Length: 183
Image (cartoon, rainbow, N blue to C red; front, side, top):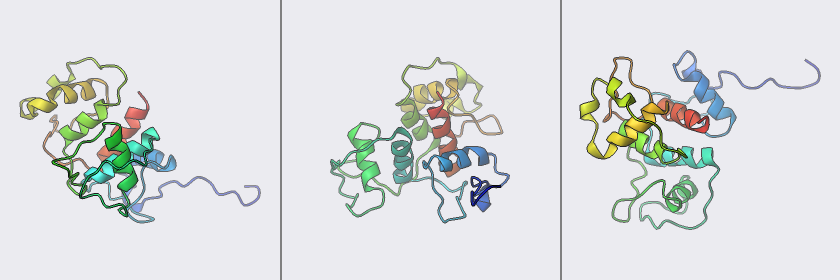
């Protein structure tokens, strides 16, 4: 190497080495969309919170908003304040009776609903039939999951299910955001 150039960070997170989503996580980290829980760990299999997911979407789409969304449980000094407000002000997220519940975890079907909001055109339908547990998907989420699966945003679990009520992991969220940006 010439000079003091440093090669791009590879395997920046020790806990993603060999993980199924390693490449997606690293790419999203390079773009500044995801960050680690520490300087060297990502916690890919930990459930993602509503605040974390809102942050990923806002960073991925480059959204900004200084206007408060008025959630009583989103303090102005919270790390996620600007991201939650930006997401709420463009209609990506909604609250519950004036609250946002930033620390609540999101399910896989909720993630599908949020992800399809950004698809510029409606995807085809029919991919939902491949999930062995498609009848367990909530009525409100059925169309979203079908569109997200058909568009290739979301894939199922290794056992052929979708697992709609399981909590979304940080790795799954990073992969969905990466795919969303590539549509």
